[in-house]
Image (cartoon, rainbow, N blue to C red; front, side, top):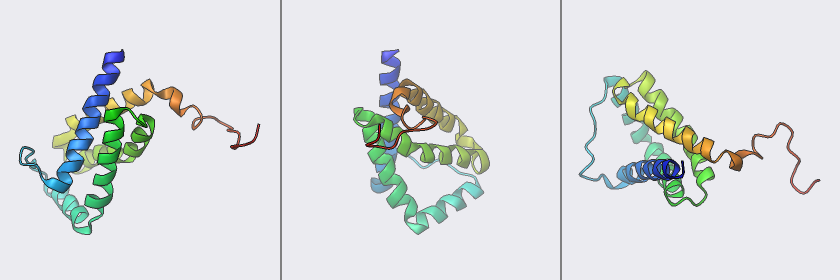
Length: 134
């Protein structure tokens, strides 16, 4: 099980680090896939605002490095949760061709979250005690 966790951590961390950096540097070894018309329009609007390139890609790189290195891994998974949900929803509604990769990313993230579930115990308590109170 330990090797499965390390493998998922390295794969997920590499995916988000490399593709996040690709948003800034446009690596020549990663070709842009063909998208549906709706998917291309949506991506064009996001890139046109600058939000996608600045905010989302910075979060992808930082969280990817957290997961890849294992430092602050639970925080990296939390930061990537809305990104991965949006990736999945994008492929469900706008571009079904990339659905396999979206499901793979969600599965790895859920596996890692389950593997580190003890780190989230305080967040998932029904009635947590405020800090500083016993």
